[in-house]
Image (cartoon, rainbow, N blue to C red):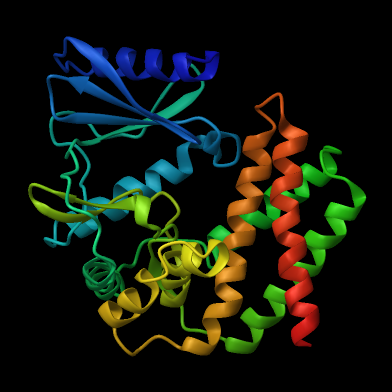
Length: 298
């Protein structure tokens, strides 16, 4: 276990103990840009901001996530809610922010894209009434700031900077052209953030929630199929499950925007590894492919 992950586990244990949760062990569930820890034998899961904490200062992402998930759970929507066993937070310990959630283990049932999209739409419909404060195009603007910070820190080659700038300008122009209506959306609606549980299908990880078009979330669901040619059958299923309100002509640009956002986080996360240069080169190769396709279509 690397040092940052160990700090995250220690922080989770310290806060849970302070809040009076009784547990015998902690189980590391995931260690990515956030760390997930389960407290055995309870049904409480802790999310600790690690890489995300470098960008979302003051626990802002976790505050947003707890509020949105609580809003949806209170209305009976298919989400994993904040834990009721203790104060869900977010809390700060040792410079790390964390929050507590219901732990619902996934079943062996594979994700059905049509059912996932239908469930996502039900969340969108409820969120159309959400009146809390969210940033317009928050995830896109956040990714822009990540790229700016990497440039300012001298962590990207000039040729890479040019590619990212051209792609960003292209997406900005498309966003302005489409003038899509904005509302609270998931912001990170890919298939690793939805699962079947014993209680049914559940969406989770609402940390990226922002004011955006519903089409952004659909683009998140389509990205694997369109960018990596994976699970191609999911794309039409997701579109059928969501319905006909989606403006299909917007999806190419928003899939690109989503991929550029994901790559921005990937470039930041890569800095934590010894093979950072190799990881950056792989991601930038894909960005150049996007730019080539745009040029060919012009």
